[in-house]
Length: 104
Image (cartoon, rainbow, N blue to C red):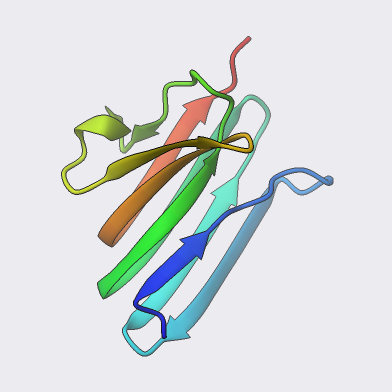
């Protein structure tokens, strides 16, 4: 029950942004993404005492950053792999903002 969340945005279909939240027994799970043109930004909140698996919808090889640093440099963030057009990470509790620019 809400100890582990799975977040997987599905950009496209004419949507340029989506924001959603769910109040869990451990706190608010939040997801807000925007896709203005050639950039993608996704903010995720994982409440205390929980973890999350997130699927960042990005082509393989794209440099994904979290608040300006490569995701691989963020303590506690574990890269799981690339699956169905998304980079998959396991996150501890916290607030994260993932960004990248689509390749030209």
